[in-house]
Length: 503
Image (cartoon, rainbow, N blue to C red; front, top):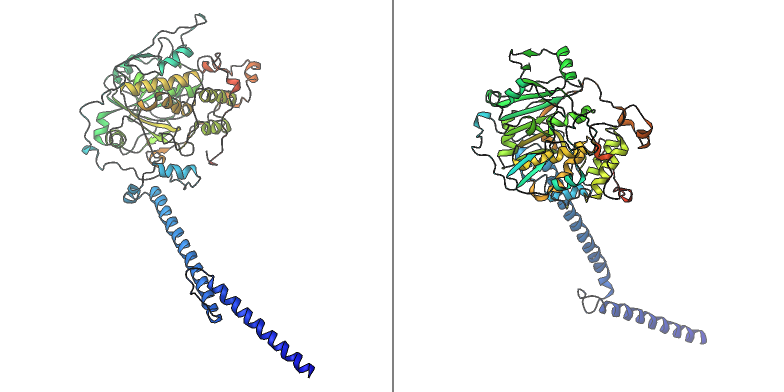
């Protein structure tokens, strides 16, 4: 009897516990969210689990699809910016803020080496503007022709003169009337033969080039129309060493009037090299084209190792007249900051490393920040081998100031270009066109020999003091040795991250 009573009590306790558990589950269901019924029975549990899993999967799939759509649109945008298909490339502004931000974030697609240049089909269809671009800022530009040597040494005048720090600072201030240093100090070098002076006076449209120290021979342009052959003067500035080298290796024609020709190129002899350094000599016809050929209204500079393969009239229409530009130059393929370019110059031994550091230290001290997407310019570093310009007063001033920096500091003109743009501010407008178009303008030929100079191997300023064999230039780069009116020892150059193995 006792055992049956005990079993009866145990069964009642078990039933009571089951009822409590059932009631507990129902209470939890009542407390569930707004999508649940007021009361759920145990039969509802499988539906609830399936519903939750399905909703989570739906959210995940929707998120993945949304990300794929964004990525697809982004990739199409980047691809359209790199393609040579005209219609698709027109969708994208390669130099727009969007692409600049992508580049700054490291999402930088591999650039094309060459791409189609949107030039007209026929040079005969090009309409040359009847009027020159009016000058807004500079009405009267003249040049300093006296060399004020502070040492009164009585030596031969310097081609670039002895520009003081105060004169340099004043030269960057825009006034309607300007008088600045701009090379060609009398008896400073780079004098032309009388026959060449007479010839270039008739040249309104110029394709200019130069060979110095016998590093190249002239390369004949191709795809040049009859109209351009009649319109343009093709002028190749050379020193005596290069002229002798060219005569030994190619046929030079004498026209009987003092002119020397290699194919379409007229060789223009600069009798006395203005500098010790051949690379610095090459900057005279490159940057001071308006001074060497003063009657020219438009010029296209192309380095001596290049073969031009696009009609020059089509180039003027594409890069200047179409969008009312007056100065056009290509952006560098790898670098946008002058501090990146300086770092590459040191690695490649383009000039004495401590002097390159001193050069850019001065620029950093004077407020030249590393390039960023916040700047108004596409890049601070150009490809200087091709320059297309109208010889307006402002462009001529820019060229003078650019040359003065090359004259005062290192001959690495790609470091100086962005600095002069920075100093002139919004007044100087220029078109920096894509690098892939730049590479489609020419065929590159190798130098006849590799350029090498002892100064390129210098690692410290002490080597200049210890060396008595002429490492230090005597006629150029004097600003690197003048006492600077500022504390450069306190300057720490910005950190440079190498962005390209090729740069």
